[in-house]
Image (cartoon, rainbow, N blue to C red; front, side, top):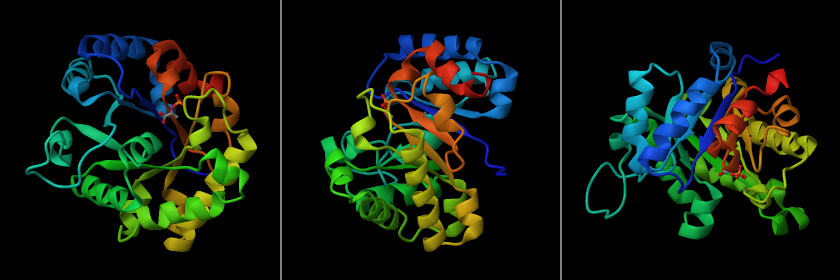
Length: 258
Ligand code: PEP
C-alpha cells in the first residue's frame, strides 16, 4: 500500500476570462464535498490573467483547492517581455506550476533544458513543479517510448536534489491522447507510470521513487477516471478538457465513488 495522496489537477489552458474563471471555481467548490478534498488533493491551473481573481475566491471562501499555474520563466526578473517570474506566482499563493507540457514543447519549442531550468526555478520559489513527459504516436509505434521518457526525465531532472524530487509531481501525458478523446488503456498508462517511477529509482533512490507523485494525463473523463486512477503507480491526473466543466471535473475527483 502506498501513502501517496492523489493529486488531480485541472489545466484550463487558454480558456476562460477572469469572470468565467470565478464562476467555474465557485461551481467546483459547490460540487465537491469535504470528504472529496480529504481523499484527493485538487489544483486548478487558470490562465495568468485569472490567477488573482481565483486566488481571491479561494481565500475568501476558504476553499481547499490549490492554485496552480500553467508555466513560468526560469529567471527571477529582467528583460523577458511577456514572461512571468516564479516569485510573481508564489506571491499569489500559487502552489503548483506545470512545466514541460507537450503543447509548450511542440508549439513553443521548449526543450528538456528549458524544462530543467524551470523545474529548478519553481523549486527555488518554494512551489511544486508538475513536470510533464510523454511520447508522440510515431515514437510509440516505433517502440521508442522507454528511451524517450527516460531521456525527458534524466534531462528534465538534471541537478535537482532527491528531496525536491520527492515533493514534486511528474505527469505522464502521451501526446496522442491529449485533447483527442483517445485515452491510453489503464494497462498502458500504468506501464509507463511504472517506468517513470523506476527511472526515478535509478536516478535517485527508493524513498524518492516511493514519494514522487505520478499523474496520468490525456483525455481523462468521468467515465475513464476510475480505472486509470486506481492503477498502483498512478497518483492522480492532469486533466484538460474535462476540467472546464465543474461537474465533469468533480466527477473525476470523485472517482472512488463511481
Ligand atoms: C492536458 O492539458 O494536460 C490534458 C491532458 O488535456 P485533455 O485532458 O484535454 O486531454
